[in-house]
Image (cartoon, rainbow, N blue to C red):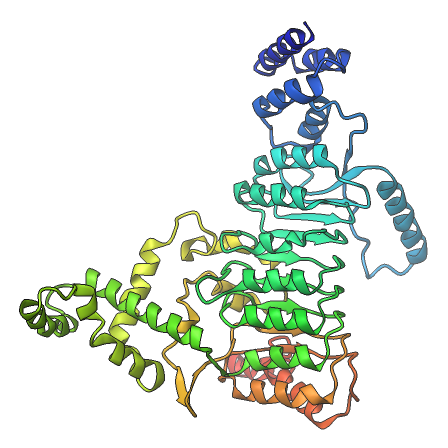
Length: 509
């Protein structure tokens, strides 16, 4: 009898959701708290609910449908006080602190609106109160309807791995959400790497104060890149104030070997010593490929050549080589075509990997094919650059670099500037990363020559633009550190004290 009553109430809720009598429906749900409405009926109601895109309306109604007793209040985030204020500055500061204490003492959702319009919500911040599964479910329902939402900030909300997975599955459904700040939320299973998987749409990710250790760093390093896959959308990653250590830094450095999308990485205050810093320094300069990486490179080169030959006209000179091998197939029909193709090309590929540059025709064709195969809705596509990073989201001095971030990239293993030296295959280091923060660690003078050597080997006009090594275990006037600072001062795009003067003088002539 109770089950039939629960089904009847579910039908009642679903019927009322489709009509304009939502308030009466909510009353019916609240009158029957012990008939299964909060589980079965509410589940149907959540699925049928059509979000309006107005968080002030949708959040309380969805919470009521789930039978939540304490409903978070949506509050517009107070504007920051002007730094130029002089009179009454201390009073304004005290009022601001009192306001924060009032807001964070009760469950509330702080929002930033543009032009005071509820439908033009830009940012959501939840801070200092526990987000349970019900609230997480409400967020997953609402977020896709907020078409103008740019950033989501969750600070000390005691999320679980399951909640993070649910939110991560929701992010691709959000048209403009590219910035996620997940700080002060330690996860037992260290599931942070899922937020930067190969298919992730996020460009800015902050994971400070999450107690990320060696295992979490290993998963993050694998998510950044392997020999066969890499995250190409993530631009800024903040891992400061964790417990990554030397072993974790080694895993992060491994992830930087074949990642060419990440521009800014912060590893400050992570108990990283010389062992971990050495791996990070080496990846910035030319490094030797392992045997497995050399084999994977040859496979990728062969696949690229085969793909380009399939899409090239039959009159291409590159098709002349297989024609000679066709004689062998007539003489020995038991030999497969694949084995015939592998008889000569591997010799060419070995020479290419060590001494020869790749054919520019093949490179051009491969890049053209890659552009054609790009997904229309992917944020990394060329024509989608404006949606990837709005000007307000770009850090100062990186605008030009971020503008080129969406360009399709081939695997770094297909680099044409590979060199052979002393029996090793050397790949150019990671020159895409332009900002690295290692301040507040345990790095000594021993690691500074490694950083200086790698930075000097980076090509002119590319490579690291800023390296933060302050508050480590070496003297600030150490010679190699002074040289690093001088080199970074020349590359830093924000260091433009003398450059504008000649331009202005030239314009005046």
